Image (cartoon, rainbow, N blue to C red; front, side):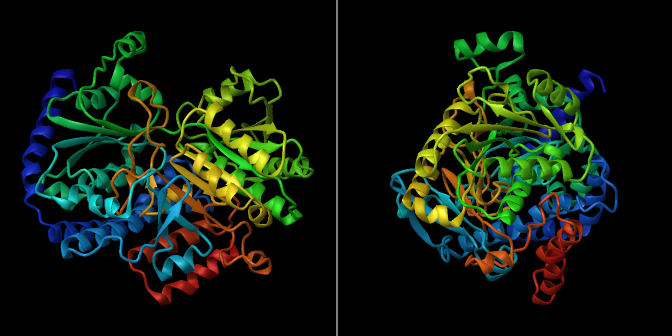
Length: 569
């Protein structure tokens, strides 16, 4: 379409949503709950086609276990989120305590920690050994938390206009989850502009959101950057949310590169409306030295390889820099296992646009880059955390590229230094990972929790990839708060947050150090085998499909088949 036609059509869409806003304002909480139930059923009905289209986009063979990634990070994530949101709305409608059944504890720095995982018995069985907390900012009291919980659903008649969601192109549950957050947390009607990569999913998403589309509450459009920009700056759009790159954010807010610096210096953004964002960054994995068995070294190397290679490295939360102790006697053994895990991970194409260019750039800047398994999968050893020009610390590669840096020390000394380096040397604050042996964790005592508090990241994973936080419906997902608009880094605001907590600070996720049965043999309270999101899990596709069907209709009789598949993984 030409510019005039596009402008007219987009204006019509915004006008339709403006009318729909009045419908949303008159939609009661019970009616909103009913709409969510219809969406839940539609996700389940369309899950098979959703995953099949996603498999095609990502060029995965039909029989690849990696298809499990598309089940888990696609329909399963949405099917897990909707019931949690329904529970919150149901409690708001009944006038009962939204946080009833959620333990509230203290965290370092005069913080409160709301324990959001496990929440019910199926969490304890299917995610055994995993737990998550949402930490509030320092000084916030339990009464203040309860007074703010519910966000836009506390006063559903007070809607807040039309929101534009610029959808992500890498993880396919992100667009629908972001739309739901704008609808319910922000109480806005929504136009979703798909990333062109996800255009083949248009009809699936339209069927999923049909109950909302029919009422004029949601519209889904396709197109390039010009469509997104036109909608973002449309006077009928009240707010914008995006998932993507920092460069895209700045282009929308500040204008083209030639004008951007002057606009920032003048404090004159082109966008004159609220904008929230999730923009990725350079995620660290801090490996705390300890005495590990050969099996521990192998499993945690596979864990780190997964954090980098899941979705072929095209994750905003993908690990990019491993921080090791140069004084760890097992450092070389761990690196040997890490190289082996990276090389042995299943082959897959660099399907996301620009991958080859980004990998070539990383290789060109690092003469000692090591190819692992494929020419696009590389390790960057020996990175210097004191080097201000090191690109691996400032550039999100968004590709299967993993760096390794070292610091001296052991125990609390090393952890303190590693946390400081992560905070001060790495760009972005979306997520950070810590891997620590249970014996070392006990020896660190309160120093571990204090250092978790020191990490300025929106999600911190301890022996669990921060991606678990993404999948936890009642957890929050977003950058650490405080980035100004002219230095946005990993973005501003949160999504997911099915409890609808007001102004949370971060999510902290813990997982078992070992898979079952070794976890039980060593005294860890976990029966979880190798998680289905691990890139070397042989039954991930079957387990992912069964988890998705279970999330649509939880039932005891489905558990044996899930466990059988998970154990074989």
